[in-house]
Image 1 (spheres, rainbow, N blue to C red):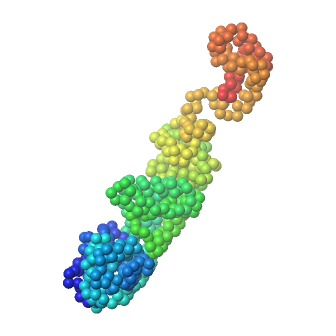
Image 2 (cartoon, one colour; image 1 turned 180 degrees about the vertical axis):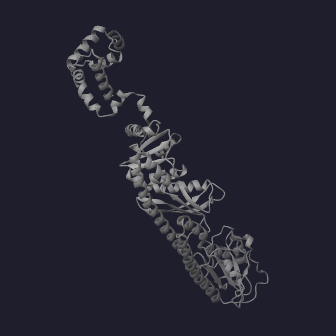
Image 3 (cartoon, rainbow, N blue to C red; image 1 turned 90 degrees about the vertical axis):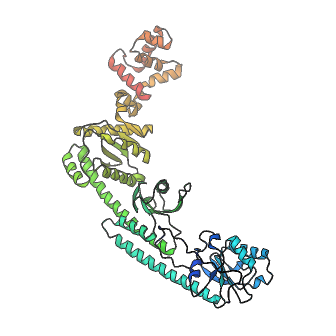
Length: 541
């Protein structure tokens, strides 16, 4: 469309920079730079690349539209390239008109402006060149010999080529991912293939909220990894299928956009797939990720079926261990997971609520693997029973904190004391439920003595009935028989010491104890009667 303006020379465009970690997805969708690089179009950039915003020349072009309207923005959209012959500028175009014209294009999101010279006017309006340079809008000259329809056809052809390339890429990626899933460690291979295809870090956070595997290894450092795992744990706790976008490391110099997607059905989530440092996925990219989600979900579901089978095996072995038959359990456990814990050992018991069984099982399996088998656990009806080495007692605190469960922990015992330790752990977990204190060690109970334990059993009902004559008399007559009896027993049946403690005469104490004996129908001069009454007092506390 004619020669270039004698006062404005085209500027050589700088190819867009691509980082070494750029996506491996095909990138043939046209950009401003793509059009500038087409030799048959011979477009000349008139705005210096150094004065343009970052990525201006790499902006994707979604269509090319021609118009000489003073305000063509009602017919334009973001990503369009506008082509004009400059009729709207006239011969005496003012700088203010050009600035307002370019401002409207920028606000609409126009990717670039192409000016066809030698059609309506010679050369390029200086005011337009200055406005584009000032506002950072790429401006290029379209030679007279190049019709606008050639630019529009080029854009359409490249968009069609991109769509075909994207579909071909998606098919190839899905084929490679499907083959990867057939490898011995199919899940790891699948994630590695997805990472390769997207050119992005990919991680799997398991149902316990721990990073299970990633590709590439150690590809995401702190604090970004911590933010991703934290968000994944929140999604798992909610227990609903969901997808999230997270801008990790906002406070750092290089934040990264993360996409997180839950795996498994609602109420039975198996984990979270995290894709890091990825651009907004298009349809082809989403198809590939969806196929990985399906394969990963299937793999995790198969793992859960295996976990259930192992769980039944563990329950059977646990019964033998608690019965004192360690021979079979030792042989099978050694083959499956490693040797059983060695003495001294403890037994831990915790509840197994349905909502936490799978997550709890996965965490315990992970801890077994970390310890080479020197940790055994099994499910016993509605409880989990753990056989721990003395050094692993801290696992009880981890379970209580992570799952908000009561845990009872026995005293350390030898191999011959497992049944006793199990009984201790059962009593301790009962206390933990009642007190809501998380972990209760059996020695905390044993230090309080046998009588103190009566307050935690059904003896309370019997004790209330035993003391009823005293409590009823006190309520009706305003006496203090119950308090006097308790103080008297605390002072070993000594009347003088009791009178001093209560601030009354010793004859008053004698009179009250005599009345208590008549109401209770017992002689409190003997040890057994006093012990029984003291136990009743403890049980009602």
